[in-house]
Picture 1 (tube, rainbow, N blue to C red):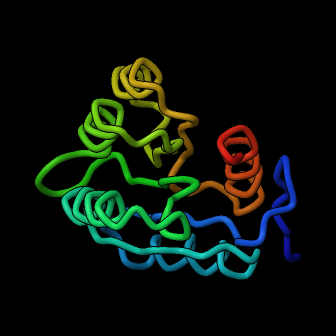
Picture 2: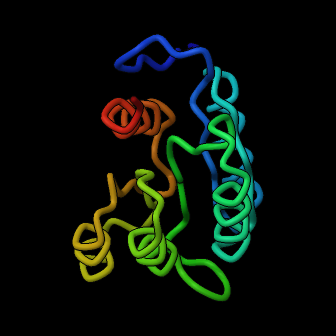
Picture 3: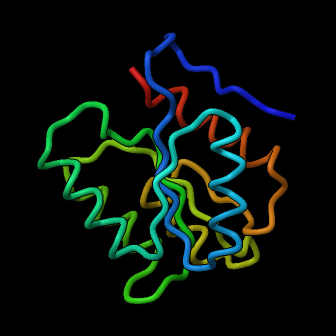
Length: 143
């Protein structure tokens, strides 16, 4: 089933989503599903690459480079998805962030909520759950 994301307004560009995930298999699964649904997907291996990409898009000022959503793994090398979320909230980026995590990890789930995560998904979630969260998170964020 192919899901086309609805937004507040009919926009000329598809949703642009950054997927920061260290596990190549999981990153590919998520990215391929989003591409099938009409999204533009930028894939990075870790939070350092995600921050580098964000800094690069901020300096270009090109609206077409603007991200509509970041999907990030909670645990990554160098710094975590929580660190990434905290840095995004301190910077001039108003982009929703959804974290993939072990939902049994109450402490990190609570910290993600405190930092303003749009949602927290189990890493092994069904693609329909991912689509639902992407739709909700981006509906409010897009102009």
